[in-house]
Image (cartoon, rainbow, N blue to C red):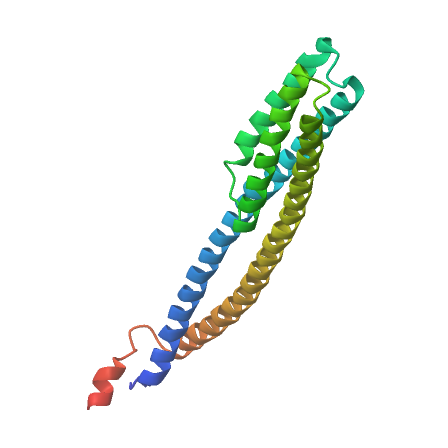
Length: 215
C-alpha cells in the first residue's frame, strides 16, 4: 500500500517560523512598554502627586505666617512659638520636595522661592527685634509676594507635567492594545496553519523539504 508523502514548500515553513518570531518580538516590545508605563505611574505619584501636596502645604504655611504677622505685628511675644512651628514645618517640606525630580523650569522657580523665603525669614527676625523697621517691613512684603508667586507657578507646572505624563501613559496603553490585537491575529494564523498541517500530515510521514528540494 502506497502512502502519499506530504511535502511543504520551504517558503511556507519560513513564513510559519517568521510569524512565530514576530509574535515573540511583539510580546517583548509589549513587556518593555508595560515597564515604561509602570515607571511613569511611579513618577506620577512620586514626582507629581506628592510634590503637589508639598507645595500646597508650603503655600498654606506661608499664608498662615503672613496672617500671624498681620495680626500680631511682631509685638506679641507669646505667639512666637507658633511662627517657629510654621518655619520648622516648612523646612521639613522643603527637604521632602528637593528629593523629587524637577524640570529646569521648576528648578529656577524653586530657587526663586527659596531666595524669597530666606529674605522673608531675615525680615521676620529683624522685625522681631525692631517692629518699626520700615525697610524690613517692605522687604517682608515683597519677599512674601515673591515666594507666593513662585509657589503658584510651581503648582501650575505640576499640573502641566502631570497632564503630560497622563497623556504619555494613555498613548502607551493605546499602542499596547494595538500590539495585543496584532499578536492575537498572528497567533490565530499560526494556529490555523498548525491545524492544517496536522490534518494533512500523517504521523511520521513528513519529509525534510530541504532534502526534497535538493533532489
